[in-house]
Length: 616
Image (tube, rainbow, N blue to C red):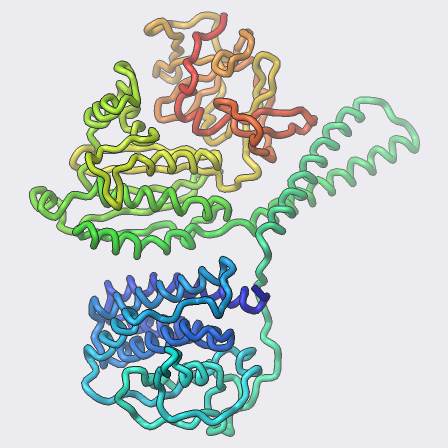
């Protein structure tokens, strides 16, 4: 794909995604003229670029859809479910064509606009148009397109030829406004609606054949943003992280050098070296933060893909559901944004199919007829929280446990608490559906969710109340490459744990109370289980005199040998081997290799491996 086509595809895909969001908003507020104008402009912009790139199927689809939106905003056609569905199908077709191009398909290999799409668009247009078709006036495309086009005579009417291409529309899409003679009114559904004067004026910077007063704009438009390959950003971040790490190690070495006595010229050189290294360390840190900010994206870019999915799936299931989105402006690492699409799809489908009651079931409750699914994001410390909740029937922990037992997924003594029973939905092969459907029932959904979340050093929790609904909460680090950690040492091993779950540090006594044979320590009036980090990870027993209170759903104290302080570490994921409880490595300021303990492992109470009693 050449650079110009690649640029068009990226920008057009963004516009196509926004179109779906605007259409669903228009469905709720049919009289919103701003939304209608935005829809018209989006399709007009895509059509102009597609015409310049010689993509006739996209041009034809956008041409007909423009007619529909113009009829909607002028009041000739009412906003009906058919009109909304036609717009959604058109945006879906355009997005599909653009996706094929993005995946390497040749422009001339793209399929033509299907007859079914043309039929529903025509039906929507003719549904409220009694007679007159509008004059065929098309606003100009972007200036670059206008400069490449040349003037030529054109037929007065727009019609699709035998080869399925609307050549008139294609020609008009790439010709500057004012150079095409006005077409007489026709009754064909392909006639292009008249664009408002303001839109034509805004879109046509050059002098028009009919308006000598308009002066051409010769100054270049200032670009306030550029597109950069994500691989280049990743490489830049890698270098920035390593530079910070090197600066930190140099600072530690310099601090050790200052313990020696320097005199004369050597003392002056040491003072200059300290000042220079301090400045270099500060700049490398600023470089790293600036590089990280370029990778941050609002989760709204991801959330805006889901309203249509929920709408169509709810319709297929015969349920009346409204998706509410909050916190779309919350920013997170782009890698997280890209990787969360499939997990959130599974969670939304799970809420729609399992959580939300049928219309008859819901009618028997005191809940409103329209169910609500909330998709929410917010920042909490160094983590981003994403919540998917519904006001459905909730999850029965006893039924979940019985189903897991019947499938042989757990033993008789497993999942005794409500929280543990709810976590069973993440087991591979688990499903409460007796018969698999096209939506769910094969037990391959929620385990994918947990795997994807933990891959990015995150964790997922479930809360559910029978008759009230269910809430899934995902916790992820805002920045994937750098994590604020607490450095600890146990059995002479250097370890780090995310600060997101560290509540405080306490001193451990020589002896403990016991509950069921397990050590317990009272902290701020509440008894907390004490677990040995050395024992959990399989290290040699050692004397662990420091406790870290872990802010998990079931808080506990993790015993370690010593605490070495805190540090923002550049985390490298483990790829060649898998160690339970450990998901990465880092280098401390002294250059020592540090193992990073998994956030999900800590939130789960370090229960992946049976925790031995605290070592004496």
